[in-house]
Length: 370
Image (cartoon, rainbow, N blue to C red; front, side):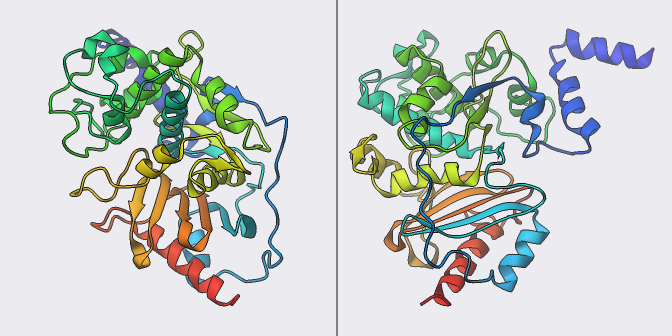
């Protein structure tokens, strides 16, 4: 009886989504979101490209063993895919825990970088005027706020989104498990001056996705397919979680199910300033701006991409909460992809400890190949 009253109470107070969270997470042996939880959500399919372009295999493919430190961290943190692409060829790759090169696994917040790329494409296509176009042009709720689409991409919106991952009553949990994502987003308010400082908020990316979809008059998954998945020759289909079967709004701040090889294509695209095999499919100026800090006091972020100067390298990164990474170091024509179950410890720096180990140990491996 008490259980029934508790369940009814959750639904009456608008927290019924918590029951789905309990079912998806705790009743399947987990304590938080996990890399293959997309099987419990409705999804949109992004088909494999009809012109598949397999990655070339490097002449030194898998001839160098991972360092002890890399092997240890991969084991400790539950890495399921580790891929190194050197000079646009696969130099090293290894899969674990029953996953393989075609396995779908959750991108988590790497999807934010992909959504930002779709913003660049929407500007290219004339659906959106520029990074400076007001969000209020698309959603009148935000008219007069001075918030722009560029503010959403660069995490400078001033919105009152609560970026709390472990509060079951918070916005992030509700967005992940509830069935009307747009309703949550359109209730947000601008409480700080937009365009002034970096504050990482998943709600920014979701609102950006809604703007792109409204401007382009296309479902975002379909726009991703025609803009990038098809021309870049993705070898496998992907899945993008949606809020429910009726609304079909993608969770743009997270939740693209794909594999290391296909995620890596976005690293190559941005490394080559929007050019793919000779064809300019994304504006080079937009790419350059995306991988440059917008704010001098927040050098760790540009527009949709994380940034680092580790080892005195200019590095840009797609990253997800459980240690999903596409790490790109253009000066050495190097892309590192890591997917897995956990990330390292917080460090007080922009990245958790595992990021620095992955980069450092790959350079040690490459040094053995000189």
